[in-house]
Length: 139
Image 1: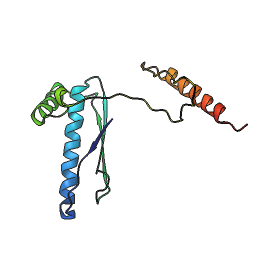
Image 2: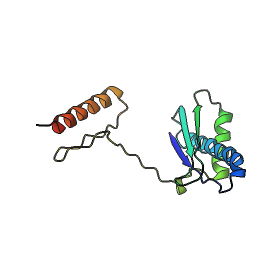
Image 3: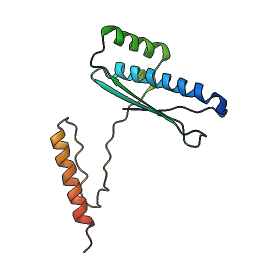
Image 4: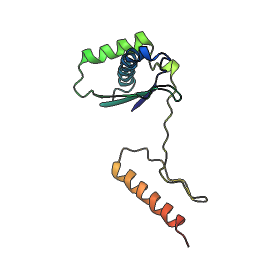
């Protein structure tokens, strides 16, 4: 999933043009993201305006790349290169995991799941919820 925040113009007469431009940038970034992570099959991008702007719109794009051809990938590589999007020298990726419930003081933080085993991740999440509920019960 890719989040993109694009500044809105102060003049609302240009707002329709801004939305088209933002959608184009979002698509280009999603193409570049596919080049950076070719193992991904589904790319989802969300674009919005920054906090404090006068508008209030969002754009959502869903790209299924399972049927991409060599030409589609070449086009994405060209867009990435020409526009300088998500190049290794100008991007720093950060991976993190957050928990829905706060971790009680004194308890060990749950082990971050690095595997793609969904069942194991669900079990870890269930254990964390039970532990949180148990410790937060009124006595």
